[in-house]
Amino acid sequence: MLELRQIHQRYAHRPLLQDVNLQVAAGETVALLGSSGSGKSTLLNIVAGLQAPDAGRVWFDGQDITVMAPEHRRFALMFQDFALFPHLSVLDNVAFGLVEQGLPRREARAQALQMLGVFGLTEQAQRRVWNLSGGEQQRVALARALITQPRVLLLDEPFSALDADLRVALRQEFRSRIQAAGMATLLVTHDEAEARDLADRSVRLLQGRLVAVA
Image 1 (cartoon, rainbow, N blue to C red):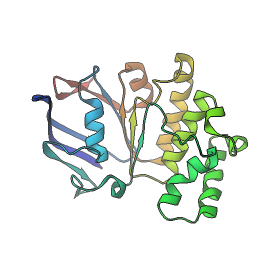
Image 2: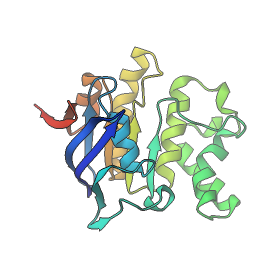
Image 3: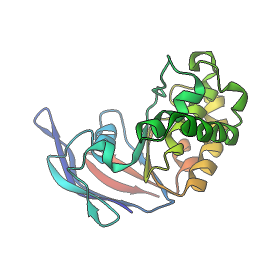
Image 4: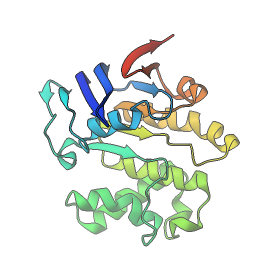
C-alpha cells in the first residue's frame, strides 16, 4: 500500500499542500483532481521521489521511503507527453527499463516483444516512435511502464495530448491493463469523466487539502 502522511509543501512562500493524507491499495486506482496550480503534479513528484516534501512522510508497504532515491522505489511515472526516446525503436523503448535494471539486452528485447504483443504492437516493433499515431505512442508508453513490474504507477495527465475521441477510446483499455497488473495507481487529471472511467475513487486538491469526491 502507498501511504502519504501529513504532506506539507510551500511554493513561493505560500502553502501549496497542507496536511495531505492518502492511501492507495495494491490494485486500486485513485484519481487526483484539482485546478491548474493546485499542487497535483507537485504531489506526484513527491510520491515519485523527484521532490522532497517540506514536511510529512511517504510510506510503501510499511517502509518509510521519503528519502529513498527515485530509481530505488520501483515506481513508474508516465508523463502527458509520453517521454519516449525518439532515437530508439519501439522495441528498444519498451526494453529500456529492463536494460537499465541490468537484464541482458537480448532477454530484455524478448520480453519487450512479448509485451508489445499484449498491446497489439508487434508489427510496430522496429519502427521509430515518431512514425506512430498518438494512440500507439501512448500504448508504447504504458507498455514501457508496465514491463518493469513497478510497485506503483503514477500517471500525470496521461491523455491530455490526445484528441477527445482517442482519449475516450483508450480509457477502458488502460483501466483493464492497469487492473490486470495489480499495482497501486495514482492518476493526476483535471478531467472528471476520465477520473470516473479510470479510477476506483477520486480525491480533489482544494486550497492545498485533499477532499473526497462523491
